[in-house]
Image (tube, rainbow over all chains, first blue to last red; front, side, top):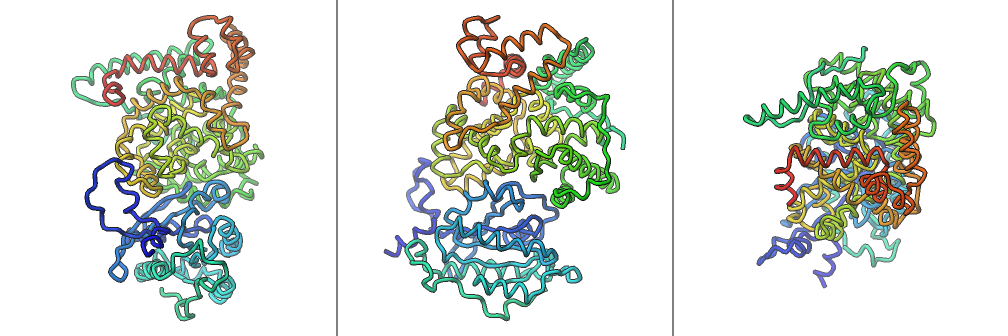
Length: 229
Length: 402
């Protein structure tokens, strides 16, 4: 039963060797995969955030993402090796309308990103959330909200209390961070790791659980919300 | 800004340089340059020959030649530049998105370029894009369009780039610039059927992995400008695509996947692994071989033959493939070469891959072309290309595609 439940999350064990015809005598160490999709308006910093987490640094220069990029990092949580896959998506509306749906399939969590220095990117969030709802089969998939670029203090347009209120309304924890700020090195890490912990403890019953059964991710305690830069 | 390329006139040839073979290549190269100028200077311009040159090994060789030939391939006159009025452009609805994308496009400019010059070019890039969008309200900006425009800007300069890209946008790129990306998706649907024809095992593997086709999206809509870091390779491919049917980039995408067969099959059979592998395009691809292979596949499995499969999930839509026929027709009619024109007309009237053509062929080649449903100009070029490619590089081809 336990293994059956686990199989609702993809495992690399399942896929390796089976079709490639190579003879594998010992299955490789089974590692669970958490698949997380990162969405939000153009230029809010989705690529920088995912790059930061997977490569450990702010990228020198990023370009517009066309379609969907993929980044991956292996972490260890409570002694278990887990692969975190981040799907970094294009921000322009036309892409998400017809191109991105494919990548919503089987995701285990969603990260919504807005740019704290750009009110329009915050105002787009309801659209993103709505769209996400349409694509996801399960209603209890963990979702978090990330306000990026908090290092640009003088340019902040989206006040924390406004963002917090919005996050509460949608039962999401809010994180304000900066993918760039070198002093903030651990924060991006902490965000994704928090999510990974959540996923690890999250019962993998996403498709069988009746909706609205209280499994919805609870908002993080308020202190988490402070900007760590 | 003049129409001078920031690269100057330095050749952007991708001819291999292999010691003993160098002399032979140089000889061929010289010969090719002479042939290109002969085609350019003949009256009327021998566009069919120029197409062949753009496709065959080495492509158009230098940016100097490209400045002359690209306009001919697109049937754009170099003498009537459109006036760019910059005034109202920056109030357009796409301005913000274009600005964001162009500002982030540093990687598209030559590494050693002074910042000031690069910033000037970025401003020009924004102006060209906004001007074209404003003059053609039916066209919609997509992220990646700027990667195409910058290539033209760097090779032919602002003035001519505007004319060329405007023509391209209403023809080859037209489908990408619809209000939605449905047609783009439709074109991506050609990818797997091509792979299936050549290598069913690879096709099945990719299907089982459910990798989809988005890994090839940026390849298609930027003509590989977004993913190749060596500008010489980019312009070489542009030579090829400008001379060919608008669906050629998807054939080229298929050829890349097929070329990487072993890597794909060695990969874990899941979406993430295969997507990741394929979206990281190797920078040292054997471009000339792949180009000739793509031309080969186009002739073997023309779009008409794949259309049914590609359309399986979508209602038939107006794609660039259909607008290209109008384009060909229009450009043929504008040209003063009567013989070619009549030939075009005769074939275009009876084409649509009907049996009519079969019953009254002019030559064997045209029978073949009509059967294949190719547009005439491309077909001739493609066949010529396949032939010349075999003459030029038979051993590479045999090695890679036994």
